[in-house]
Length: 66
Image (cartoon, rainbow, N blue to C red):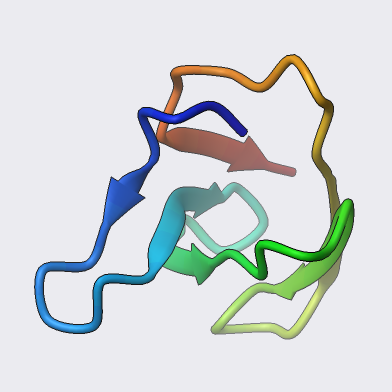
């Protein structure tokens, strides 16, 4: 991820916004800085989605999981 990640105003933790197309719901995925990949789950049905981070990063704070 790039240095332009969104940060939670209360906790200060970095996150990305994910729209889960399976159930048409949105959720934040809080990032673990030390990891190169992470698993997130749809908050409604529980489907697992794998998130991989590249060293180049991106400026996009929102993602589609489907």
